[in-house]
Image (cartoon, rainbow, N blue to C red; front, top):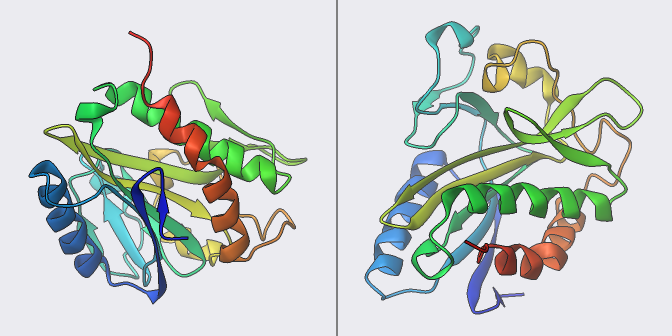
Length: 216
């Protein structure tokens, strides 16, 4: 699959260095704003790295065993690494409702729908951005969302734990919430192939894009 509703759908094999991905995303956002490129939904993995959002607290960085990079996205500290599906969204909200809250809500609903395809009952939590599940155990975070919107073009996106090494989250307080653990599709005993999760995302993508035109 190379596009959905006219938007480029790109899946990068292997591990894409964070700085390389950031430069590509920024360049694409500028091109979309200028009307010189299509919007982009980009699926990839990063080598192990901790990223700090605009509201990250230094006290939440416990053990910087991997590189730490400050980003322009919202949110606090999170971990990216192999086995985690990153989805960067370069979308033009200028023609999709101009509603940032609607966009974040739509991203959450998209991930929840994709996880449901794999038999995971996930949900939003009031006051906590991200995707959560109980699935027979304690409430845990399975997906993180951190976005930035500049001149109505979206940047960054979401991360879903498919089969990462969950011990790597121990170097930070994920998203500033020490009372909640993280989990993954593998930890929950579900299909933990990236290709399977990607297919679930693709199936739910048209509904996600349609949802961005929220009613006023």
